[in-house]
Length: 243
Image (tube, rainbow, N blue to C red; front, side, top):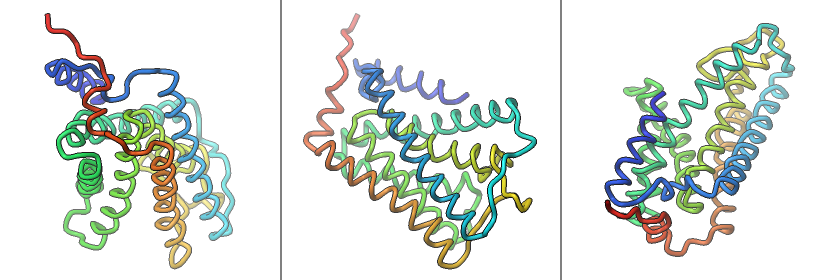
């Protein structure tokens, strides 16, 4: 439950600056809920397309996991929500807010994306494997760029959380691709997960995710034109009067 700890720490740091959590977009609940839901829907649909592609390439159907129950769903929900909140508050919370304020939106977003990619070297335990390090840095760094862009453009952590949770939860709980093992759907051939190789693997596991990143970032660029994002992030939330 490190997410609430990071949230409390963010509140304390912002309070010391005379600001509130509003600078992280924890305001306007109806708007933020819509943004989070839209992000979840977009990422979740992309995962469904990816996994249906894997099934078509392997000529294997997905079937309901006979061992799935409410306990499995609750365990997966808890793990996915906690991990997403932890990563979002760490990489798209107070630190990214400060990076954008001090470095500008472009450099702040690039720094956040690079940090997210490097972080996954250690979380995936691949340090010392140059090929995997390069692959993971590109893929997770691209997702980090999308999440950071969403934060910078919407001035809120809501859309990054929705995108991140949509991708992870549908992948892990829906299609059994994560570290928790079997989820709601499993391959009918008894395999732990479906994996594609060659051109199919390239298209499904690299091109498709990067295309999602490109489309989302292009939409955000048009829907939220960059004005004075850094200045806006510094001023959006009301200043808390000193006591």
